[in-house]
Image (cartoon, rainbow, N blue to C red; front, side):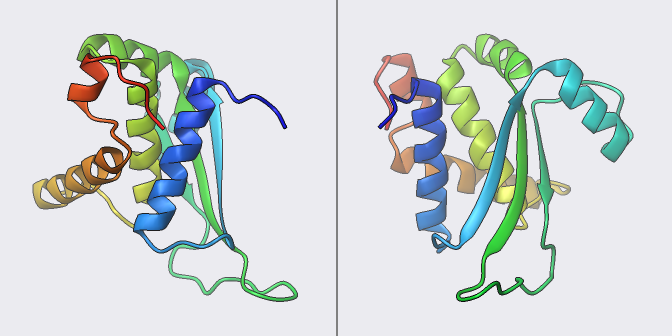
Length: 153
């Protein structure tokens, strides 16, 4: 058994809670990559035409497709979530909360994108924000808790 650092524990807790909330099973798989600004800037440029770093990118693998069955229950690869820890650290400072809270927020944000949520309209943005805060609040990861330096998990 390995000891997980607090950031990894938080991310795992967020992904497990999102899976519970949205009815995902052990057959659903998500890849999460932590990177620096240079790496995410290259992805943002190549895939979104924006030559600048960003905080999180999501790449859904099965948009509208049926899952592929491999000897047994369907294994559903939802996609990849890429988070720039450099941008996350800057945003945590800007929003006056911990890096753990910022990364938890970016993780659930990325997961919601993989599940089909978006924020192209104000209505969609409001719905997505409610979903993000709902998942985080179930874990006690709130702005208030963060300001009181409570431990998440």
